[in-house]
Length: 66
Image 1 (cartoon, rainbow, N blue to C red):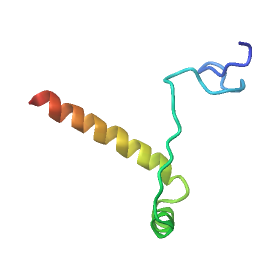
Image 2: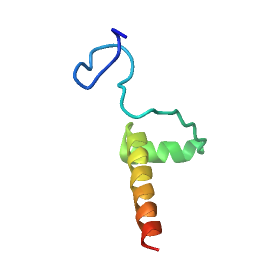
Image 3: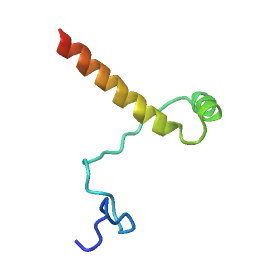
């Protein structure tokens, strides 16, 4: 366990022990990827992650008000 990455010591090997994560693969047309990359830059996948988080939060709030 000496090589666990932590919030205190981010230089250690491995991933931080925060929330468990999974890798998700999504197929999109190549032209769409090129358009999105041109508009939002190479880190557009982070924007997609944030979009999903906000969308899920809004869904939860809408369902809890019913």
